[in-house]
Every structure is written in C-alpha cells, then in structure tokens.
Amino acid sequence: MFALHKPTEIPDSELIAGALQGSEAAFGSLVERYQDRVFRLLGRYCRDAVECEDLAQDVFLKVFRKLHTFQGDSAFFTWLYRIAVNAATDHLSRASHRRLKLVEDDASLDVGGDQDEQSPSAPLMTAELAAVTREIVASLPEKFRTILILREFEDLSYTEIAAVLQVQLGTVESRLFRARQRFKEALEREHPELIPGRGSAALARGGKR
Amino acid sequence: MNLSHRDELLVQRHLDGALSPTDAAAFAARLAAEPALREGHAAANAMRGAFAAAREGALRPRAGFKAAVLAAVRQLPTRLQLEQADIAARTVRFCRRLLLAAALLGSIGFAVGAGLLGGGAPTMQASPDEMQREIDRLEAIVRAGGQAGGVEKSAPRVR
Image (cartoon, rainbow over all chains, first blue to last red; front, side):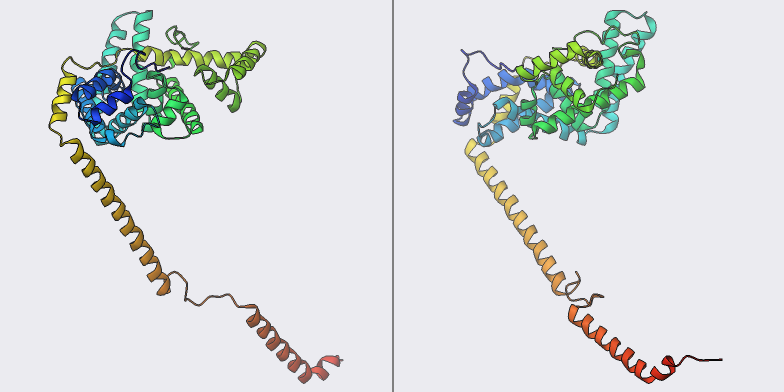
C-alpha cells in the first residue's frame, strides 16, 4: 500500500542515521521524500496554503528535534504521520473556530454558486460532492475526522492507522465504522440529493479502490 | 436493506481490503448467494465514491519548502543539546509526576488518619458479639417481664 521509496533509493534508516550524525543532506532527503505526503495530510485539516506550510514546517522541525527518540520498531512514515496528526489536531484546537468556519464556508459557497448557475452535469456533481464531503468531514469530531482522513484520503491500512494513532486494530475498525455512519447520516440529512439511488451518478463512481 | 452489525463490519472490511484471502473468498460466495448482502455492499461501495471525489485537490509544497525547513533547522541547537534538553525535560516530567503521586498519597494518608474518609468514625453496624449481647439482654427483659406478669397472662379474663 505504501511503497514509500524505490529499492534503489537510500532507505529511511540510513537517512535517519545520517541526520542523527549531523548530515543536513540526509535530513533534507527525508524532508524531500515526505513533504508531499505531509502537505496532503495537513491540507485536510487547514486547507490554507500558508497555514499548511507553517504547520508542515513545524512538523519537520519537531521531527528533527525528536529524531533520536525514533525507535525504529515501526515504519518511519507512521511515526512522522503521528507527529503530523498530533500537530494538526493541536492546531485545530488552538485555531479560532471562526477562522476555520470561514475557510469552510468559502469552499462551500463557491460550489453552491456554480450549481445555481448551471444545470447538473457529471463534473459539477463530482465537484459538489467533493466539496460537500470535505465540509462534512471537517465538521465531524476530531477522532472521526482523523480516522476518515487516514483511511479514505491517505489510504492507510488498518494496521498503519493503528500504528499512527497508537490504538488497537479493533478500535480502528469500530471507530472507522462509526465515522462512516456519522458521515452518511450527515450526507443524508444535509444533501439527500447526493445519496445513491436519489439521482446522483457521482457517488457511484470510484467507490472501491 | 437491513444488515446485521456483523455483516456491516464484514462489508467494511471487504471494501477496505482487510479480509484475508480465505475470508474474502467466503465473503464473495455469500455475496453471490445473498441479495440483501449484495445490496448493502453496493450501497457502502457507492458511499466511498464521495471520498474518492474529495481526494483530489490536495495542497502541495512550494519549491523552496525544503530549503526553508533546513534554514529553520540550522537555527536549532545542536543535536547533543537537543538530546540533553530532551533528557532534562523527561527528568522534570518524571519528578513532577513523582511529587504529585507523593502529594496524593500523603493527602489520602492524612485524610484517613484524621478520620475524614470514615476510618475512625462510628458506624451503625454492630459486631456479632455486640448483637449477641443485645439479644441476650432483650431475652432477659422478656423473661423478667414474663415472670412478673405470668399469672396475669396465663389466666384469661372472664367477663
């Protein structure tokens, strides 16, 4: 699922060892290797490029500071994801509710305007569905939001999610189930027109990976 | 469509690719044979389409991001200083917890000693010996009363 680097590339463990010995190039390689993933993950929490970059920089600085505590008993990326998820949730709890709400409202308003002006079509439905999905996921309680992000957007396996969140596999499964239920209920309540079987073709696409 | 919770979890595991090959084969056989399960599976699969649609449009780092991180790293203390700071912070945390635990235990000990937690307070419960003594006392009173009014009781009144 997570083929993080090609076999010919330097393994993470060597880069970590190099970084611990003071090699800036080694740490730079780690940043380069994971920066896209970290941005993608953090972008699910803030969706503002500047805010996301600040947060990503904090994450990598924390990684640098704590690198000597990485035991190597789990994959480096799960350790990195744990730091990133913790940073994102801390950031969310610190950030003003008003500011986050504005970001979300802007996203949903854009989509609403398009829908009013044009007749429904497949790309528009997909765009609307995407915006609505992001909006609902963002409105869920943090633990449901995070597990949906890790599974549905980051494509992590149950085992990887368990390692990132430091919970049991059974907890991952049950929390994921409840998160999906909450998502479905919200979609049915707020946008019933997007529910399968009620005139939406967009939902039927790309369900199973 | 009403699936049991067990089947709903099974559908979730199947769609997440979390079933073992054996379980996946058994599930596929059930899917072929059970229309309700098939319907539930299709509905759950369709719901995943929402997430697939929202997966696009992720933010990407700008070109100079790595350089900015490395520049910030250069401002940090040396690795040795970071490790020493980490050890110091852990020691402080440990000592703080130790002090807190000691304070908590001390408080509990003080409260018990002072009888605030019911240790020295009188209770409504009697020991078996006390109960037996009380029964004996009451029986003695009854016997004494019986002897005093025995004639009166044994001779019914005739009006």
